[in-house]
Length: 163
Figure (cartoon, rainbow, N blue to C red):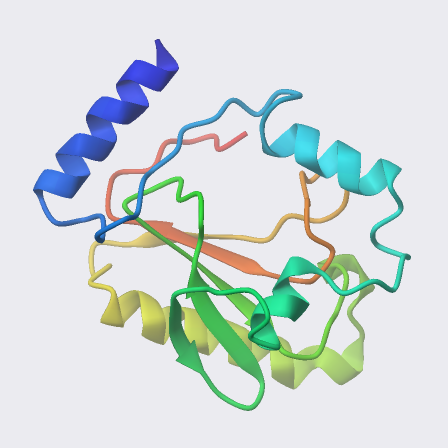
């Protein structure tokens, strides 16, 4: 039922021009086969402490393609490959920080910059009616990539509570 609803919503968003060519909106359950499952697998694999390049590091290095919306010397903004709303993009620092819970006073300026860039990009994406910022942290926060990232979701009324 949820998959049928998601396909119908995605078709509706595409008809209104909210989704870009080749983009789809995916509604997945938070269970073991969804993002929560990915987070559990990442935590069990020790990806936070692995020191291996993340998918986001590879996007920064341009060894993995992404639809980039904005870039400066501190951060990169790109569309989520599995959008959960008509507009869904990620804001990531170029300097890898594994989790929001691992930031320190030296990160204050960078964190503020990420929020300002998120707001400016949301405006450029037409999210005048509002949007949601999400930062997942660790296994229980459903963080599946251990490189700090801000999700910006909008383009429709979002429900509450989120999880």
